[in-house]
Amino acid sequence: MVYKDIITLCQKNDRKAQRELYETISPKLYGSCLRYAPNEAEAQDILQDTFIIIFDKIDQFKFKGSFEGWCKRITVNTALQRYRGTKVYGLVNEDQLEDTEAVEIEESDDVPLKDLLSMVQGLPERYRLVFTMYVMDGYSHNDIAEMMKITVGTSKSNLARARKHLQIMVKTWRESNNSNAS
Image (cartoon, rainbow, N blue to C red; front, side, top):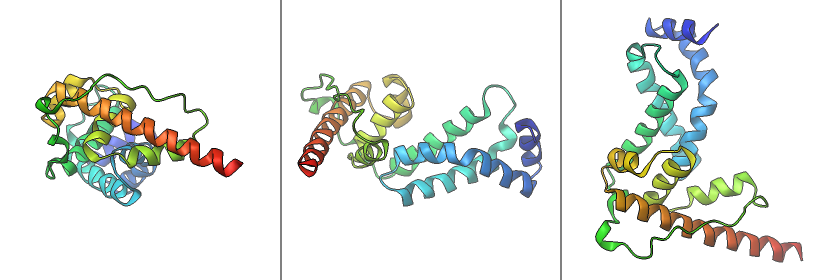
């Protein structure tokens, strides 16, 4: 079945088509959920909430643009909405800016992807959300500020702090693995 056919059937509440769509696109969306969530259980919750919204609003998809992109946007918004109520990402504002120079993470080819993901999940929520949106999903600071209802300066500050945290985590990981290898 072609995406268009599946989507059309889903718009008619066809359960078989919904299952097929879920099985086709959920692995990609789950990857996005993992980047925003602090653990797998929350990522699964975000994914479930995402599909409830997708199936509820699928009749609004007009076959203009990428369906996967449309679903990914819903995923990001669902993840942000989950944390929006906790106000965790609004704790840092422009008045609290410290050294916000970009801290680059050293080449991490030696760090397995699973460990890098775990490090990103270990970031404080406000840093993880901005880092994920900017670095992994390619949103601009203006887009992040608008979606998270923060200032551009806060977005930039949170990104710099996330990078600094990750740099420390990668360094610690390397030291731990080098001492284990000895």
